[in-house]
Length: 209
Ligand code: ADP
Ligand code: MG
Image (tube, rainbow, N blue to C red; front, side, top):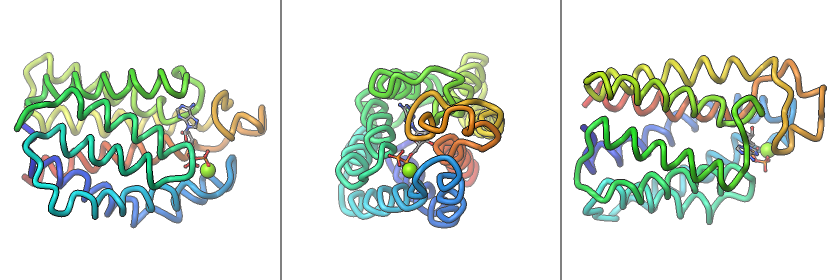
């Protein structure tokens, strides 16, 4: 179960994780992009952290909509609108004060659908989708089998990590890295790495609650 407090704690935990891994994300982006992914994510989630202060949300969705709007408006790089769209989509699907694993799985699916509509990335294109899709699949599978939220979130975090690692041999077909063509092969996708951090943060806050 995720309530408003836990939803806010997740966004705070993402901001903390990004803080810690900012240089690593930037390093990944310097190999196949423009070396700003850590900066972009840090800027976005620091702004989200501040925006949630005193929001007094009445639903879980309100927390995510506010996060999404803040990411879109505060980040210059592609990841701002992309993650912003994920959180806005999730938020729109969670007009409730608390969500169980099934409802959360549905919201994750809406977030994925929206970001794929915006960015047109397919699995295997070497983007954040390659971590997000397996995370959603495992979260949903656990939820459908009656697992509790913590178990589902942990499965999602592990799947996102595997998905992130599996981007290394791929050739980028979307975003800046695609300009490199075959030279993008052999490098891990920065957006898949930040998605793995986001799902790890979810599992950690749920476990600690
Ligand atoms: P920018 O590419 O504008 O510098 P960032 O460096 O912050 O933005 O983010 C780059 C990440 O965004 C990539 O590693 C990739 O995972 C993700 N990305 C780029 N384009 C797309 C897309 N069309 N769909 C999904 N994710 C994408
Ligand atoms: Mg970049």
